[in-house]
Length: 404
Image 1 (spheres, rainbow, N blue to C red):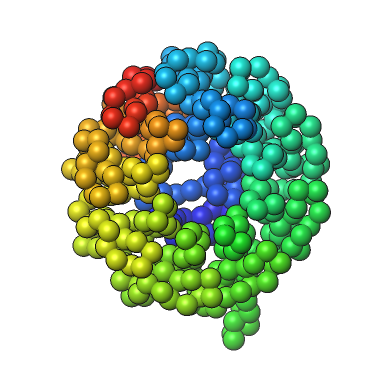
Image 2: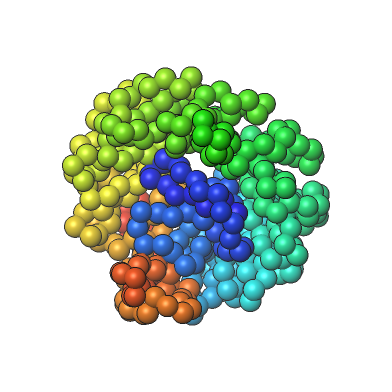
């Protein structure tokens, strides 16, 4: 199972293999290590834009949002009305009218009315993408359709989401890409493989050094599997393409390249993300702001941290609290939350801290639905932060008060 470390939108993968975890579909079956506390519960931290579904798979229809009540997960609509009673141990994204939910230690799928489409018998159930979802049973991965039929058999060690008609799968230790019929479109030849974005995917290719050793470098591949650039020692990291650009760090800092590999925004930032709604996060002097696709500063770097724009608003951190700004940089919602996620369907999920506790780093670390952030204080102690989660509208008013 490839693990990747991400500096904002810039992705760096290290190919190691882990047991199955709730992070199985983060990016490409990789566990995402953010530059902040590491969550222990995927549903408690998955961004609203990923969690909110359309309830039917049709654009413009009802969106459903997961909530926690008494340690159990259910779903509300955009007005804050409970439409699926809290009953699950974990609840994830609604897509194509289906949501993966966990009961005890097994996963299944429910429809927008909370009825089981696939009973909780799976080791893992991924989110639907392009009508198919990656699932695992008995240690192997395959794909189900919206009716719960296994249309691509269990035969892969790991499998990712479909993007642009292709999904990355692992075969005998190498990664390739499969089409929706289950046929290999790109033969397994990469050490790691990312989802396609704008017709390009980040991959890892093996290389023999002059000393005779084998190493792996990052590169970009097209939909035929050809490496279009990269695969060199200096090409050690690559970000997702968006608006025709991808962030890439070099010795001088983080800059942006186009699809030919040419540098179009000079590497000068301490940190940077992929573009979203025409703007990208950048950092200088330890502060975060936003640039446009020409590299012009759109919003000055004045925030302690900043996230991508969604639906015209972006979450920013100021003095330890999170709020939202619009694309002029003006405060749309004052910073008052301990966590703030992106808007989707007019709502955003926010978190309020209710407690922290220190526990020994040795031994098993147990967390509950809200005890979801684990921060390593030092080699002997970790801090577990407990939070309640609610939903706000674009005016900052709660449609669902924080609960746990």
